[in-house]
Image (tube, rainbow, N blue to C red):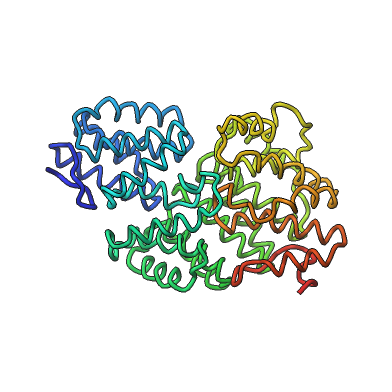
Length: 434
């Protein structure tokens, strides 16, 4: 039987289909463009090859085309009766993920990987900070992801793709020494891996290595295709380094070049998250509000993300609503989430609705009200998923509120609780608290 890159059997008799599938999956795992086209070539060579339909579904969902993704997965499910046990389990797992059945999908994840640890496309959904575990709404998820990757490591050895994900998981869990060794080894062995570059950026951020992060990303992005899914997001990472370095001219250039809506290469959730985070952090650093950019982002979010989905993306929709002064009502994101939370249909429950009044108050200069909403929730931001670098937006907002309310003691306490080694704090007034 033909096998994939990781030695797993594939139910197809077509070598051309297998080769196209292997190519497509490699592009999918490294966030390089061309995966959809390669999966289509696999399907053309063998229309009955279920795994190529399942792989295509994953890319379509990543790009924000949920309807096409569901159609592609339905094609895989229709062919599942004739596949191996591993392939059937793979398809059934993604069916749970697509249906939003988080707890059932988590149970299926561990069962599947216990039997087939080298199913990299399944690992990919769990290792990502915005993936299945990251979006579970649980506290302690950073440790959970790191422990999963530790357990899988013997099955992968020195595989550079796996090592890049393992490195980032360790970094998010605070194990920066082994994370740095792994990510340097990974990017040296396989430079054309956007997630490797992503991991390198995060590890530089977590270890406070501003200059290394700027040098690496500035060079790496020159060879990464502009339509690569991570081009916009990695440009956002570089913009954080530039804001921290005090180079507002370069940070603004990066925003206009690769983060603004019509230039960002990612899907709708990534466009909203990166755009809103850049604009909000810029204001925290003391730069003036770009009202036109916020208005465009708010309009886009209402159109492209009309309903709650990813908690991390929903946080940034809430920021756009706060700046837009949207009146409280049933169409606001916080109210939508609040309607889902009591029924157990939103993994992080009422956490984001509780944060939302704090962001609204902060956006309009009511620092005391912002503190009243945000301070009691400090320490719970892991519940939204995403990385520690992304969580910093919440902590930095609370810090700026303390400074704006002339509460220096609480500002110093917050600064003192910051995780050791992490990048600096580009918040106006923070330097005087050191």
